[in-house]
Image (tube, rainbow, N blue to C red; front, side, top):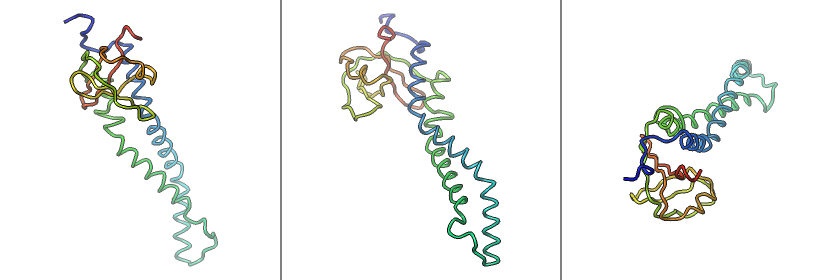
Length: 175
């Protein structure tokens, strides 16, 4: 085997490119989660006050606040449920233990050099996918033009994370 086509670990540059790619893919989820958590925390005190006020109105059967009563409570429920749904959807997949980011950060992956045998059709936005000689499909950690212009038959650095996710990168010489 040629020494150029063998490595145990990703180089610092390759790891940085893949980490940036993974962070970019999870950015929207993380921002939504952070914002909904902050909104939930900020809405908690006014919601307690509003709930107390609604309880008092219910007991006295006096509805002086009109249609807006309970709106803060509904906003709290909406922001809290948004946070919980995104948290459950993303835990282990986009963040925390065994996520792509965690596996890469803790060097829980294998590296192979494989020949590109095909590209899956462009879906209009990333991720872009490449099929390699081992028969597996790899998500490209490349920009659109790099993916589009990458010739079939060329070698790729293929990374398989501990959680089973597969990524393909350009070889070091092409950076």
